Length: 276
Image 1 (cartoon, helix red, strand yellow):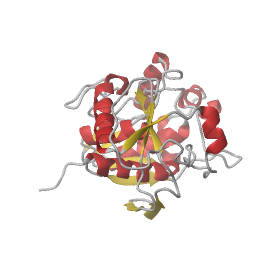
Image 2 (cartoon, rainbow, N blue to C red; image 1 turned 60 degrees about the vertical axis):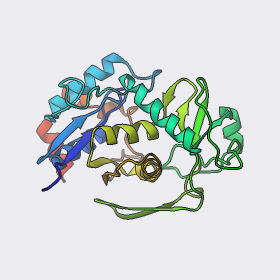
Image 3 (cartoon, rainbow, N blue to C red; image 1 turned 30 degrees about the vertical axis):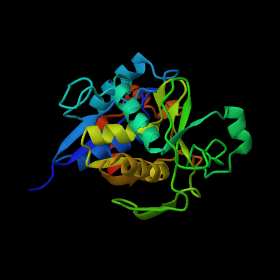
Image 4 (cartoon, helix red, strand yellow; image 1 turned 180 degrees about the vertical axis):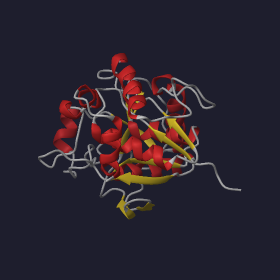
């Protein structure tokens, strides 16, 4: 008996959706054609996520022709599909990691991190931590509000995985990335922890996202192993670049779906460009 394919698209409503994300989500829908596609609203950035961007996100994806079977607007068996409504699940995972000694409190300020963190690759947004707050031994810690927490990586452990698009991948914990943030003192989980908890809870069988998140996949595999959660398959897409060779971001207003729609470009024209 074959396992039902369950894919997901997970936009963050911090601005209007641009062409690069739209292409990734279109690929995710194509790969979920014989299964289920889940839309998850990743709205944990309290400062930048806004209701109008959430509404625009859903409208733009529908305009492009994307269709999902589960999500915040249609419901489903694993609701809620908005991350800000799922905070108790993330806190429970954090408490488990703390009890196992796999996470610890970090009191470093942003200024401290800017001074002590090792250089990191341009495709990764979290510098290699120097273990300034890491306990000497594996020890459990209680959960406390208003504290940053890091995941303790197994130093020098190799994390290999085969990407369905990019082939064999391999990263080394403690070298390619260090102990990484999983909980912020404002009471919110990091992308890494929330993603792992939700992908498991929503029974996602394959994650489709950009190749800039390859290193995040290695981190998330370690979290999955620590929490006893299944590891889905991964498909990392090539990134769309602008005329200067930089990857597209929400600052590229000229390539926002809303802008392109206003210019008279049709969804079919965009999809044809995605398929090339």
